[in-house]
Image 1 (tube, rainbow, N blue to C red):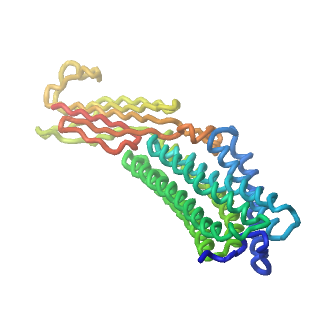
Image 2: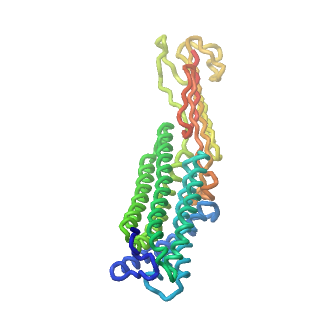
Image 3: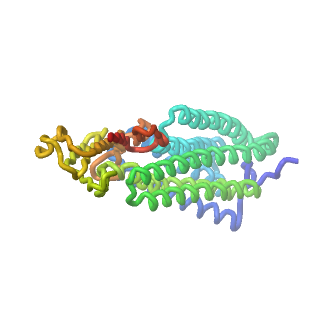
Length: 386
């Protein structure tokens, strides 16, 4: 037996506490839309790119969506097709727009083109499967003959709510996984700083977003259609506000290593003959002001025994007469600078244009070769000669 009409058709008008709750939810959503509009205009200095436009569409889609349900709930004497059109246009922009926002942000931490295409394909397929049937049914359920559409609509409504919940959960899970990978890489490279705090913040906020989606799912399966649809407008506006918090921390996390430098620290050691070994020459190169920064640190170590004729000039030609060790450490950081609208120097033109940190790690030596995951941000080459 199909679920009963719980506010689906035009003849089902909410009253009492349900109507009050709907008005409160939609009013708060409207307030958040106005606030988000000012935040967007004040924050983005370059108003272009996939991230910016998806954010605008998702934000402004909440307004017609909420207005359509408000007109329906208040029983305003307007044509059914009018408020239904507001609802479906706003709903498509709000729901799929939110997913595109998540997809755009995912480019910061995920550089695997195949996986990004899979995510984009999932969004496109779900938009077709989730939106098109519902659009047909919602027009039918609010027509002069709603009965043939109410039953199928009430069933498929649960399907599409679950579908979009799973979609956003999958994107958030990928994001959390990749963020943890960046945090591990930065720790491995010695770029600690506030990485732990930033990572914790990013994960917690993403979990909160998923929990908000679960509350929508709960209202839907409790057959509280009127409350669920109004509450959804509020939840999506809150999720967009949280998006700014996520992005601020994410840019801080991925840019955190740009101003740092790589170096090698050598403690005084003793060679096989019991002779002290000290650093006698160090050479550092730090080029951080370019998008791809190269940092080199070359350290030559020799034994404290008497050196050859070239030892006094402090050059690479110095040849100690005793045992000698030459250790060369080269650190190269490859990165595409993240242009951020959230600081005074850079501007986030489009996260969808592959603004991210590209990283590789390799350690090579006479005893073999080891490679860590490709999401590291430094390249170390260690050569030892006896």
